[in-house]
Length: 203
View 1 (cartoon, rainbow, N blue to C red):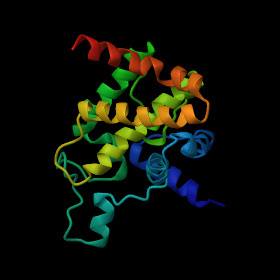
View 2: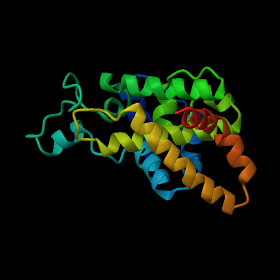
View 3: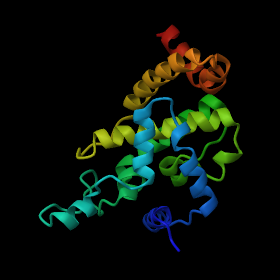
View 4: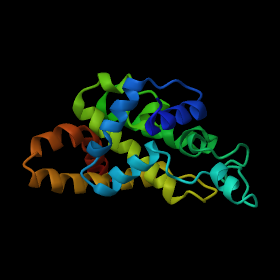
């Protein structure tokens, strides 16, 4: 028999027009509590995976007066997959985020919907654990910013994401140092922060 999480997996697969294996889905579920030390970011990822946010389509089903169209692009219905990934207005942001990780970790990280939405993909699971952690938090931060501009006609900017990342990483640093995980912190975030420090020093 299907359990609720299977229904959610199938709903994401339908909206993203892509198959997500049961194994990858279980991996994504198991990583919710490790995506960040910050409980708020864990909650964001939990709600995304379990489809607990109100999409434009869902709101239209409750209140027919509300248009099901995406507020950003006005060219397609606002499913959860559209609002987090498919919307053409998000293309620039997601492209810049994946390019940022590719540049800073010297790996070719291609934009993939499973990684962006679920927090992991078949390819990302083959990467070093430290890079998997960095990618997962980066994806959660992006989705948090999208939620903050849920009803806006403009998407979050890459600069906003980068500022938020630096802020979040500093909080991760405080918590990980307190837990005597300094070396892990440096392995996870050293490559990301190295270029940022160069920019600051040269500015």
